[in-house]
Length: 347
Image 1 (tube, rainbow, N blue to C red):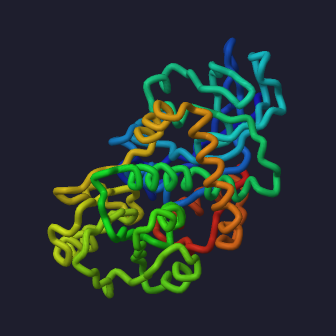
Image 2: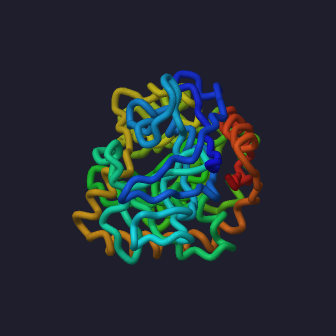
């Protein structure tokens, strides 16, 4: 009997409609490799993938049953079967994975660092999500990597765009959902730029957010009183009421309004002057400017500085199997996950 596998599928219109779909592990064709998904992280970033699944084609990476989608996650997987000589069984990779037990990939452009999945339905999707790296992460740091590394890559690219954008010219940068990992990763990097960094969060998360040391000021959404100076707003929450308040307080002093995440699940939260940040576009720009090696080196330097601090900011909570993954997804979707908790799942 073939080994069984599974996927966790959600309703595209109702993300809390979850179902574990069982299936046999697929047979391989020539040129394909079978990965067994091992360790993944579940964060608010995955909620963004679900909310924007149609608009940004996140649903297209891992096909599901009609009307349903498989939310992408970042993590580690092991090669369990291969028809490609350069990738032997037992190899471990890091990359973009389904909420599921297995993934078939078609590796191309294989080098010492990894490969690109050239499965036909993924060829015209953003290249940043199709690269798989051969893992050099020791087991003791894999949990930190699945929780923070994909989020910090977004933080790195966002901070890079803001600092290099001559139109920014802001004295203050305000970040909503300031207790979220992507937000405080961005704040960590912006502190080096000389701008004043203000974090907005809910009352229950103020103490944690202040303890990070990434923000010059932390305030609750209702208590935020901003000075009339040139201000950039980074919206990680997608809360229309917060944006309305900022527009009312700052008027023309709000010189930049960028939507990054949608932790409050409002697809159309942007204002008339909003722009949506799409990390793969900034990645493509920097690969053109610096080359892949130059980008990897700069990100690696920033990641090492951040990781030293981040180890003390998260309590890892471990889960096992599809049923616990489904419950963890529902908890993160509903905002029940504490900011200090980092949830990882062994699939």
